[in-house]
Image 1 (cartoon, rainbow, N blue to C red):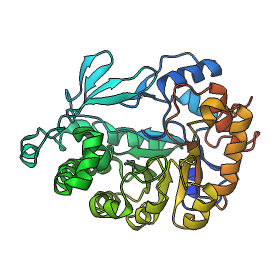
Image 2: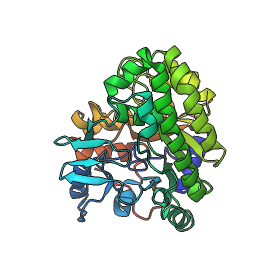
Image 3: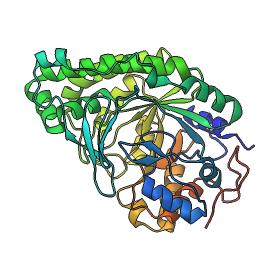
Image 4: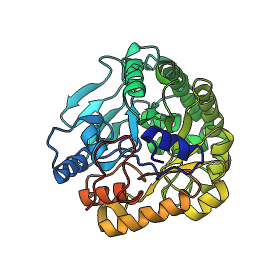
Length: 385
């Protein structure tokens, strides 16, 4: 029996075997596609229209319905807004965001922090800082109407992205190196900063979930906790400084929606996965298979009862450098391992980057299902080469 995209996604995340493995490209801030790669993809598919930016910071594109139909994508994003006037464009490649962080875009990439406003701050400075207003209506403007429309008029699985996590946002405000030093040498300050961030983020999340929490299938929380070869903090430090605050945030989220909780963290986070499960994480993304310890067979064997997996298609080497045949084999292998009995969504192991050939994106999209299988709620057949 052919399922709709929403039914397919729900089945997979509830550990039931769907008719095919669901596909996500562009369904959230963490599973997007670079604007340049997206334009190349549209040219490859023979589609002509200007690209729309979904996230300025990550320079990812809004995936349009014709592309969703051609590739058989099963997800649709719901994205938070920002308060009016809070983002200031300082130059064509430089802007100040709603938190006061100044960012500049690297050639061919996304925006990086170039001015962290709390780089030299003390505890007293936290009291005086102009924190974003979490009750500003701009965060959730139009979200309820869009969620209602999508739930009623489409059959996509709906994914609500929450603002970036408390660790990341604190790093942006403080500077990455200074934040790491704080965690080891001044945990009182590190904790106070994260608590201030958390106060804002919990209230913003409450507004977003009040608007759409009853209608979405998945809620995304993103907070990277891994380097390529290890967690960014020792497990003990993570459990003292980060985990209790993440639990407070995730408890607030789960009290306001029945949607599945999707947690995005890049890197080698194998030692932390039991902690994620303990605080209510139900789906892990991006499954960075090139990071130490992130072997799909082991992940499925040890955590497949408690977690579904979303991602896994390598963006470091496979997608930019491999052949379409390489990509197909890798996706088929991931679907066989992680998708056994349900519990897997095909997606790139981070946002698809600018140097990714469009043929490889097509190969990723077509490999997770039978070539002649219909794309669920779509009218057009999937693209094949």
